[in-house]
Image (cartoon, rainbow, N blue to C red; front, top):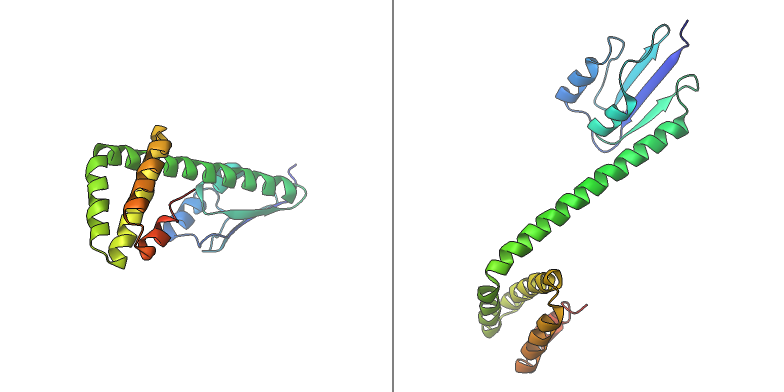
Length: 177
């Protein structure tokens, strides 16, 4: 004979969409999901869904269960682990995207340095801001390629060449690490 089971998921990050609610309905005839929660109650039988899969699939949720099924601390630990794994995957994707951007910049590095020079020669604050943005990308590229000393040398040359432009020099300080 099965024990009484009460299993509740509460959406935290965002409400469930209609499609997500429909997917949750497929897990059990004993659930009536709302945009903010899904409650499963079993007097006989067992929950046939996989709680870890639900936590991984839908927006960050806090599972709550009676002691007869799983302790809240266990489920919270699972939710935290899955959330960390998701964050790690997102960080890896961002890192991969940044590497792709830097590799694309490497193909036009010379032109980018020329653009920086042209922007600085305009003697305008918006142009200085754009130049600094390009320089930050060039710094990241140099760091990625292991050529940071060469970048710093070139940056110092720019500072020396334009030493009489305090607005530019103030912006260039943002690039230094």
